[in-house]
Image 1 (tube, rainbow, N blue to C red):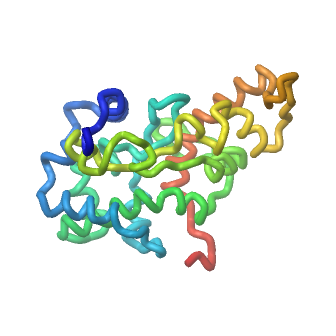
Image 2 (image 1 turned 180 degrees about the horizontal axis):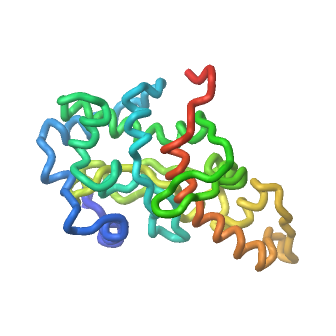
Image 3 (image 1 turned 90 degrees about the horizontal axis):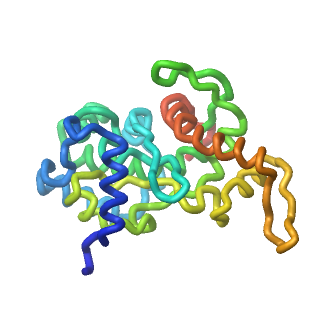
Length: 244
């Protein structure tokens, strides 16, 4: 039925939300938001993406809560249940941009969410040890290379329904890295990771590309580390000079 999420896609969306937040803490994004705010969210996602990343966007990106999509092989995503972490998302967004205008805060949040892939390309962060929860995370040059190689999907490309569908389910319409082809074209994503990192790739008798089992295991672990790597990146990375 047009305009409704198919059952399997609805289950995936609910699974993502269940994995990313406690039901006790969850606040329905759709039913709990004023109509004007919901309308602004939909209008923002229908409008062209802003060409400039402004101070509001940066303030929100700094507060982004990165989760892990359960789709296919899994991949980093902007938490659709709590994109700004635990608490009332709309209130947190208004605090981030220092404004009492709820519709504007929702608009800026949706713009910042769409600009996240661009931010990853525009910003820089030196490899090193960074605070991350209870234990530091060691960000490497490999992590940074992979973050810039990842393929992001918009809400429409995710195929889980429209922005209205997300809001009706109690989630914010946020983007995710493609869990099926996280680094471009291959479902056998360790091969593309190896190519991006300059690691050995061999051609098999049938013409397909592969890596050794040992390297594949290392790359799968490295792929899972891109979630904390992205979390550290949005918190700490600075925009490059001469960035428009």
